[in-house]
Image 1 (tube, helix red, strand yellow):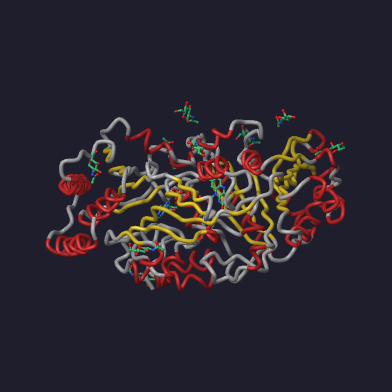
Image 2: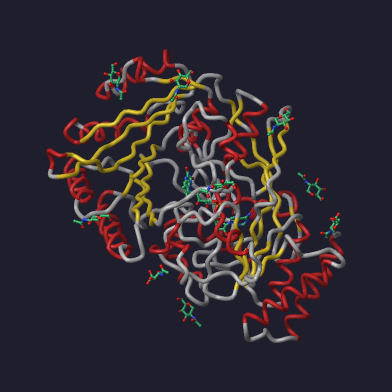
Length: 526
Ligand SMILES: Cc1cc2nc3c(=O)[nH]c(=O)nc-3n(C[C@H](O)[C@H](O)[C@H](O)COP(=O)(O)OP(=O)(O)OC[C@H]3O[C@@H](n4cnc5c(N)ncnc54)[C@H](O)[C@@H]3O)c2cc1C
Ligand SMILES: *[C@@H]1O[C@H](CO)[C@@H](O)[C@H](O)[C@H]1NC(C)=O
Ligand SMILES: *[C@@H]1O[C@H](CO)[C@@H](O)[C@H](O)[C@H]1NC(C)=O
Ligand SMILES: *[C@@H]1O[C@H](CO)[C@@H](O)[C@H](O)[C@H]1NC(C)=O
Ligand SMILES: *[C@@H]1O[C@H](CO)[C@@H](O)[C@H](O)[C@H]1NC(C)=O
Ligand SMILES: *[C@@H]1O[C@H](CO)[C@@H](O)[C@H](O)[C@H]1NC(C)=O
Ligand SMILES: *[C@@H]1O[C@H](CO)[C@@H](O)[C@H](O)[C@H]1NC(C)=O
Ligand SMILES: *[C@@H]1O[C@H](CO)[C@@H](O)[C@H](O)[C@H]1NC(C)=O
Ligand SMILES: *[C@@H]1O[C@H](CO)[C@@H](O)[C@H](O)[C@H]1NC(C)=O
Ligand SMILES: *[C@@H]1O[C@H](CO)[C@@H](O)[C@H](O)[C@H]1NC(C)=O
């Protein structure tokens, strides 16, 4: 499709919308959409591209990448249609025809959104699911790759490993995450202290805007290119592909995993951990995962903390470093396992390091019903605060995990305004709290518990406002109600983006002034 055709396209939308009022029923909208799509597609079939509720693939397709069982509940609203584009023209048509028929769209890449925003809406809507658009093309000479948004991060890691043992990419751990949501919201993982976020390593992108224009970095302009590297994709357009810079990893990396209960001194170890890890060399990532474990001697349960590390180097170099900086952990030679970088990817994705790499290509995964929240810590939490936290964790009867991710290194070298992701220098570590909601009947009890935990933590975490990570989406932070005003959206906007929020809203005003791309936490036009 040429640009002049696209100009006509947008012109005809404007005329169409102003002449014909929206259908009142969503069935009418759906019909209108199908007619519009078919008409523009010409002789080609929509079979395999559009799935209506009566299609037997509709339900398995919808559920295929729901990554939170909370949204499998039959009372959660379902899309009128699911569009699975095979090419960019299908996306252009989906945008054109949904605008004409006042259907909202939700774009889904990997479906990992914690609040299900990529596939749940309370107005008539359709999903554009990008799973067919997942090609990955690697240019070893340039040390770059173009990755389509529907690829999973596991597919990307696999493709890189298939070409090189000494290249990698700094993104998250869970291999089924979609590149589309992950990159547009930031994306951190086990080598981010060395190389920054996934979004920090994006050098070009392809986006389809509200008028159906296909834009690369030059054409979209630096302000939009800035916005989609951390500001979330869902406010600006359909991002179809990303050009990334690959990074260097050594042929041998080292991991370790040490768990301690409170009886074994976990509290003091954690106290030490929180003061030293942000200052460790960037080659060393050492995060903690806090959970509960059975303990007959403590009337049932105690807190257990695992200290899990990845070092970009050999055990011979790591051991003296740990013995010097964190002797209390008592690491010894045989606590360290050396492996290739891609094996460490398997490990952090929850697989055995000896498993075949093809496991990274698996896209489906069962999930529990969960609720997550996030925080950033700027001052070490005093021991008294930690004691209270452990008590809080053992109160109630919730199954939970808390991941504490050390910052520092490269993250402190990038300014707060370089990309919309503002959580840089001055952060010791980030926190993710997650609770298993178990069932719909039990959900209120566990939701209440995690909200009380979050309230307990307030004195110990970032303030003015309390910060949060967009990719750990949390609707408790605030939502757009009805008119999506800038003022209202500040509630969540300042927490996710801090001083970058206003600039995001200005970019939004330029590229989508009519607020077509919207959801509960999209950025409204300034
Ligand atoms: C099990 C699990 C593990 C996780 N681990 C990590 C981790 O290690 N590190 C980390 O940083 N994060 C992690 N996350 C969070 C993850 O980064 C976010 O959930 C991310 O948004 C997922 O992207 P997705 O494409 O799978 O999600 P989706 O649900 O498909 O999309 C998320 C949001 O982005 C929008 N979007 C998706 N694709 C596009 C597109 N192509 N164009 C425009 N907008 C788009 C959606 O509309 C939605 O608003 C994890 C999440 C889960 C569930
Ligand atoms: C129509 O179908 C043909 C044959 O399958 C394909 O080559 C072409 O790309 C399709 N066009 C569109 C717009 O989908
Ligand atoms: C869906 O969730 C609602 C609210 O949590 C609950 O009342 C209802 O029982 C659930 N329905 C099913 C089928 O699980
Ligand atoms: C791995 O790379 C080779 C070329 O280097 C290619 O032929 C092969 O298809 C790739 N495998 C996969 C599964 O991508
Ligand atoms: C972006 O697209 C334009 C128009 O197709 C093209 O001239 C330009 O070279 C592209 N820029 C890059 C960096 O690829
Ligand atoms: C670490 O090594 C020591 C010495 O062999 C051993 O006693 C201890 O159990 C190991 N710890 C872990 C967590 O593997
Ligand atoms: C992986 O394989 C190696 C070599 O066969 C073996 O020594 C090691 O114990 C295995 N590790 C795991 C976690 O299975
Ligand atoms: C994933 O898909 C495979 C192949 O279709 C299937 O065998 C497997 O049961 C699925 N797993 C889950 C968890 O849905
Ligand atoms: C704790 O939760 C489990 C599983 O959700 C439940 O079976 C058990 O009865 C609960 N115990 C108490 C004391 O609430
Ligand atoms: C839109 O939101 C603003 C800010 O919350 C509010 O003042 C205004 O009344 C709202 N307008 C409508 C029409 O809801």
